[in-house]
Image (cartoon, rainbow, N blue to C red; front, side, top):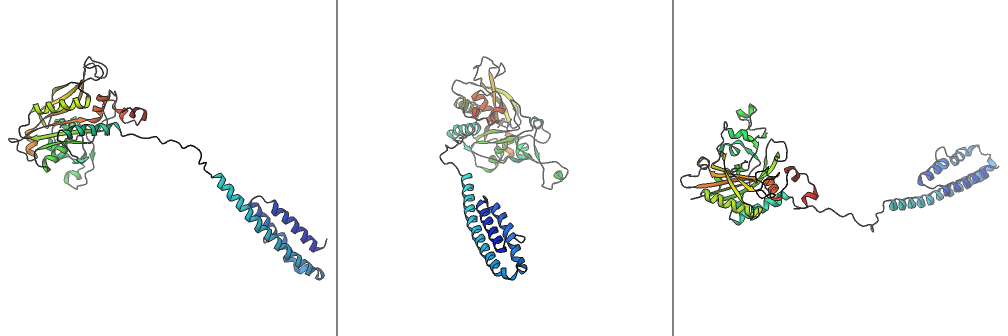
Length: 353
Ligand code: DAH
């Protein structure tokens, strides 16, 4: 076959391959095989010098024609394949906007936040204000100003998380710490007595921390609400009346309270308040361990020492204080047998409230 015919046949075959290529990658293979450095048409161009003279003009012309035809066929096919590939990619990534959406689960406010607000509302209604204090507290506010100096046995009642003290003080260098995660909200009493004018009618809700392992009746972190009243002529009768009113508001008018003598370092006299069991109403059941009563809070008349340490004259003023755990109050209100259920985040449980 004459060389020009060979080139013509190569051109025909290449045009067919170009049409047959079904992806841009395949098309590129065809281009490289024909027009690449070692391509079949390139070989003819390179070998032009060896073509017999009489054929050269014809071969040169044919090679050029074939190259032009192949190049324009490649360009056209490349455009077509790229457009097809793009539209396939778009189809593959397409979102069916007619599909129904997946419904979002609505959360609810947590029971503890709701009950904290409910309790605050009761005291706001009695003219109290709501105060807050730091969760990382000093030993002074958490213990000492509350009548519990360093060697006081009440400190062993509460296992404390200490925070590394970076103050550079001698004791801090020895590895001791005056900084802690507050074990009670009672320290807010001291801040308020130091900072605010009398009389004081306040509550202080907030988180407290103890080195306890979580079990049905203990949590290492929980919520307390502290209460403090300091005014002229405040008596234990005011304390009893206030807390009995409060308990009936929270737990319902059919629940009764009792005050049991107790000890707290910052109050004298001190008491614990029990609420009648909401399940057996005093008969005795598993919830109340057969006693008919559930322990709710601690309270008492503010110790005169605590008043004078914060600069208040105990001859002129007296006061009462109380402190309760909100998680515990929630269990008593809703007959929940285990504090840990409040933290499990189970929506089926939380939605009930
Ligand atoms: N801070 C006490 C506790 O964590 C609770 C308490 C008891 C607070 C008596 C008071 C109080 O203000 O008067 O156990």
